[in-house]
Image (tube, rainbow, N blue to C red; front, side, top):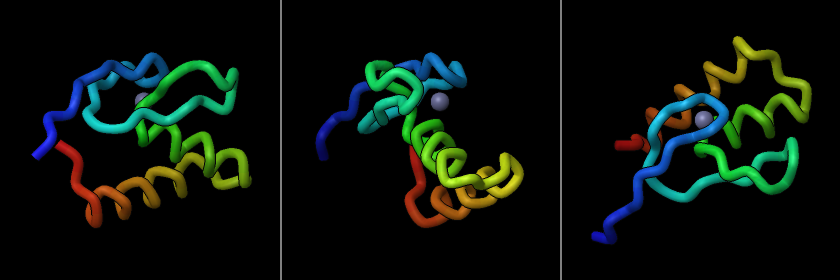
Length: 65
Ligand SMILES: [Zn+2]
């Protein structure tokens, strides 16, 4: 298996492994996949509470280390 680099997300401060997402806020900042998902959901008008539910569903299907 390929070793994934660990990075710290500037948005939530959490360490994450894997492919970062590009922030919609400035199109330059690399953020963790969760924040990328949150921004995308926010963009389509999903409330924060619902965003967390969706993220937990994603995690149950694609567990992250
Ligand atoms: Zn984050």
